[in-house]
Image (cartoon, rainbow, N blue to C red; front, side):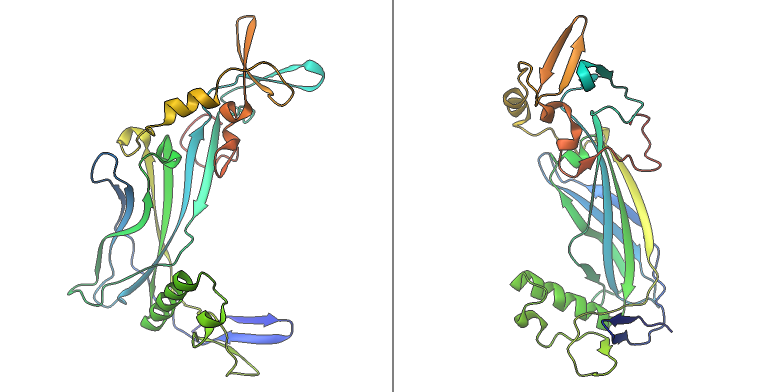
Length: 275
């Protein structure tokens, strides 16, 4: 059995001792879209087993590739020098990678079903014109089976957060007691629940060619407004060069780092050759 003990400014807080729950493997992780223009759902299916608990929690991490609107093959360097970009080094500002993770409590149960099977559980909704799906999208889902007490606690916590918008509001914490106690004062209110369980994982890559992504209806009109070639100025440092000429765009049109959550930090093992 295990418990967590935390020392906060000399005060000790401890969770109760619990035996580990062995979480079932995720059977499948997949995307669905009902029709053109409809949102894309990330779904999970799993068989929790006849002897497994009927309560579940899911988490996920997302990674995706994005591009700038135009490719700038050079930029101005110090003292008027020109630095040329390459798709195969991280100097280019054309390809970037974004990251995000689950921000809410994703819970589910099978207590009213005849079998402990989770079928096509939705864990995430993505608009079909979202940048995340525009080139290559990756999601890793994590699954944990819970005790009923843990599930009830997290479900109550999520309902209170949605209602009040504040985890530590007096209204929320009143009566919300988990399995953590102050060693010196067991009656002191402590917000939190420590579950002891294994976590199973499954990941999925989704390419743009699989058809889930749709170009936004306003994309081309917006591109024309945002990315009209402009005269040189000091705050527009990215250029697209052709023979003996250069075309200068605002950095937001040629720098992928200006996309939401984007950076040049390429994930390890990412299955494209460019950087």
